[in-house]
Image (cartoon, rainbow, N blue to C red; front, side, top):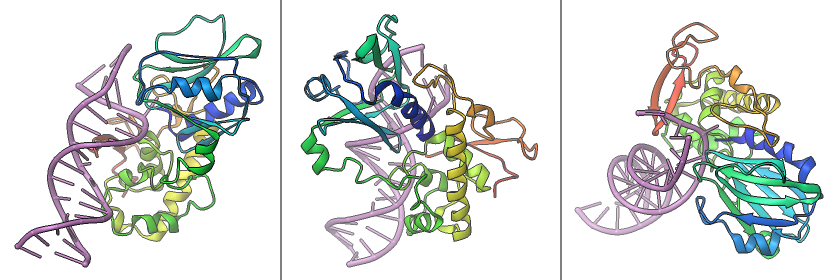
Length: 274
DNA sequence: TCTTAGACTCGGCTTC
DNA sequence: ACGCGCCGAGTCTAAA
C-alpha cells in the first residue's frame, strides 16, 4: 500500500486540483471498504461544500471543508485517489466519485477494499482528535532518538515491528521499515531493549532521510502505486533490501536474506546490518 | 497463587 | 502464492 511517502505524494498532487474547489456531487458504490462508506454523511457534509485544505497524518489524508467538517481517507493496501475528466471511463473498483467544477472528478478506487473513509461533522472534528492515539510524525521535530528510546522502554519486540507500530511512529509500513533498518545498519529482528541511544539516533536520522528521499522520488511503485495523476514513482529503483531476497547487496555484494517477522516478509543484508 | 494489565502474535478481511 | 495495512481475538509475561 501507500505508506507515508506515497500518501504525501498523493496529497501534494491533489492540492492544486481540489483545494478551493466545491464538491458538486458525490456518488458511492454500495460495497463496504474496511467499514461501510458513510454515504449519508458524504451527502450531508461533502456535497456542496468547498475544500479548504488537505492535510496528512501518518498514512491518513484529511480533507478539510469550509464548514469545519472533515473527511478522513486511508488507502489500505490498494487504495488510489486520482483526478480524472468526468468523461474518462469508470474503472472496476471505483468506489467513490466526487464531481468537481469544470468537468473534473476525484475518484477513490480500491481493489481489495482495505481502505477507510470517515466523515466528521464540524462538532465531531472540533471536539475529538481522531489521531490522539497515533505516534509522532517522523518528519516533525519531536521525532528523535530520545523519543524512540523512551517509547521502547520495557518492551522486547523486534525493532522492525516497533518501527511499524503506528502508535510509536506514524506512517511507516513494511517497505520503509526494511529500508530504514538497512540504512541504519540494524538487523530487523534486534530486540528493542538492547539498542543504545546512539543507535536510536541513527534510526531517527535514517527514517527522516529515507522518507524524504522517497517523497522526492514520487513514492515507490512496487506493484501498482500511482500518484493522483496516474504516474508512477521511482523510489523502487533505490530499494536496498525490500523484495531483493537472494540478490546481491548493492553496498557489499553479500546475499540479501529474507525472514518472516510478525507475519511480514523482512529483508536484510547479513553483512551491512548488525 | 490468583488477577490483571499490557505486550505481543496471528488470522482475517479482499482481489489480482 | 504473495502482498504497500489494520484491528480484534487470543496468548503470553510479569507485576501486584
